[in-house]
Length: 435
Image (tube, rainbow, N blue to C red; front, side, top):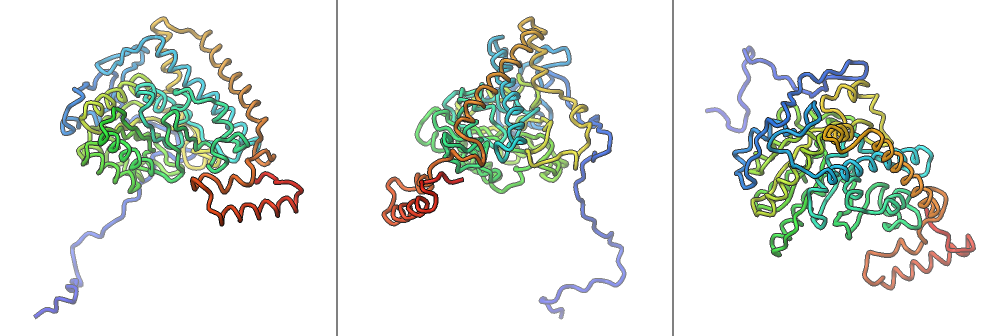
């Protein structure tokens, strides 16, 4: 009788085919000619717009297709056209222009040594600004680190953003956060975290609490496609589905997670929107460079959540036009021609051409707007620099490192703080700012 503790003997000769491990590989590397002809972007207006209470099982086509509104003729097409007023469209274009001007100035400041780190969102502006405008101003947002457009759309002062980036004496976060990791309770903007995908379960939990209290506010969170491989994202999907949380899970698929392409997060096998279907979550895949489509999708999801129909997962199919951050050089891992070959164009240019096509804008006004944005950011930057820049002093006083953990500072920490301050005064002649 065979010993059950021993594994079965393997025949000396076998017809079994040897296994092989698949390692995802991007189609183009440095030196290659980029070619996106394999991507089926569909035609604007082709995707149906279902009722906001539709069951997720009826949304497979929307999770695998691509919701588009703006066509090559620069006109709006189909049932997803949100029919926004020209004033709203101009405001949206203005926010995107301001974000782009802000990114350019802050990137330059980092290169000049005024701050340690910065992340641009060039090419992705519509994925944050359009949804922010579709949400109510008091809906709680849980962003990742490339959604500066939400703050700008909600009217957060540029001066406060720059103070935080410089970690200077006027930084409301007191230099405790990495640059660009903003926070504003007044603007319903949850603190950005450098730990990827942690904001997803936080957003779902907040939405569950809002529902439990009978509130009317919903939550929305943003995460990159690479971060959907994190366990936090999947935990968030489970809780959102089980408790029918009034939350929007925005996945910004910009094709690259730092230097690894979307295939390593599962993008070779299926769409990121389709992940929602497996959880029983309504799912939309949207042209992330089409501001009107982005607005329409967010509006649909927000109405669904407010109607107690549950969560929605939106994949914004876009492209990261520049590096991951100031610490990254994309020429080391992707084709130099990718940006120019991307089939969905540039979100700012597309919205500009739409406004021109409907007779509500022109190149002269656009140039004047770009100049005004650049001048405003320049003037605000000079004002912020009066409060200090990286390595030039003018940081928060030493004692603040002991603050904001306890409502009242315990006696032993107060003693440590006093002792440390006395030592600094003895050594430097003053309570010298740290940093």
